[in-house]
Amino acid sequence: MKPWVVGVSVLGGISLAWSLGTARLVFDPAIGGTGSRDVDATLASAAWVAPDPNDPELDDPKSDLYARYFVYSDAYYATVDHTRIDVSRPRGANEPAPEAIRSLGATYGEGRPNELYAGTLEVQAVANVPVTFFAPDHGVFENDQRAITVKADAHGRAAVKFRFGPLASTYRIVAASPETRGTASFRLEALTEREARERSVLLGGK
Image 1 (cartoon, rainbow, N blue to C red):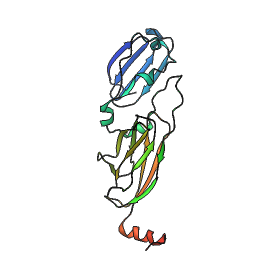
Image 2 (tube, helix red, strand yellow):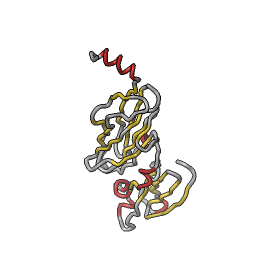
Image 3 (cartoon, rainbow, N blue to C red):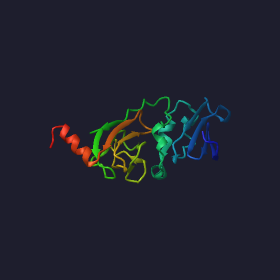
Image 4 (cartoon, one colour):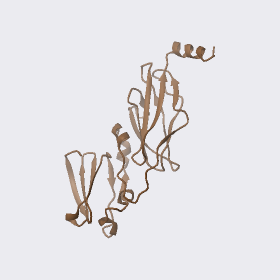
């Protein structure tokens, strides 16, 4: 956990400490909790809504507190952070296992250096959750960055557009959500005109 604590609040058996880009939730028996649990959730700009102080589950370390009180703010979506592809939200003991994220449509495509990829990179997550796409090699998304976080729609689908960089090369893209497990991946190739013609001939084109 990052060491710079900005503020601390105590609600029932929960101590909620904030650091830069990190939320930490601690079920601490010393302040009224019935169990002990220490979870670091590196979810930059995510936030906890104020729990109801009369909620009996505040003192229950097996409650589904995370799902009910964790929210993703506008600032979360506006922040560029490629490390989110490695982050999973802590889940309550009674919550079901997260669904796996998966790619939709083509996972391979071709284009030209510096041009917009003609296809769309789309994944199936779960409804209304953040999905982060990251291009570890080169190229940018519609925010002109190598990482972007978008909100899945009511059907759990999230899609982005991608622009190749100046290199005729392979471009990898991965996508993940803190609300799902695993990653979805894509592989795109930027080909020069000559490479595209040669490939077309090899594939039986003209």
